[in-house]
Length: 148
Image (cartoon, rainbow, N blue to C red; front, side, top):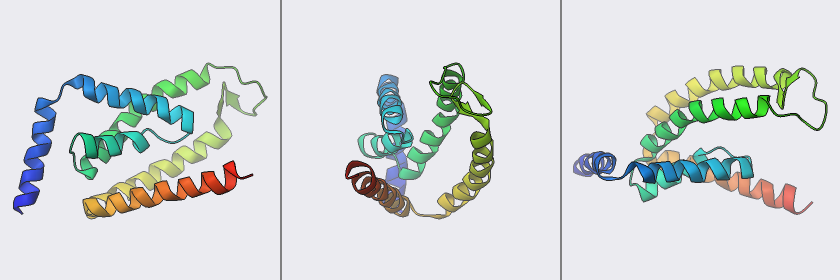
């Protein structure tokens, strides 16, 4: 219990003592890595917040997910007003609505379920899940993308 209380005190100290530019720099790095890799910004944000800023994984995930709302909106605008080189049916720019709308429905349903599960798990469990997911992505890239 004392360790948990100390961790919370450390997290609160992080918010009051760090300059906002360090958080902005974290966002910039995520903003560059995400479109270059096709992975979400959370791949960068969660590890940086939890290791460099000493935040719990749960708090880092909450912050990362919250930042998705704004960044996804602006990315959507960019993709909507771009002209694709190939013809896409039912599209606005690069946004293919026949694919996007069912995915949005799936994300809305599953994200609620995922949030409820994450609240019930311990922080270390989330770290294992995150590491396992990264491992699967790494193996997929090595064996199905690079070696083909």
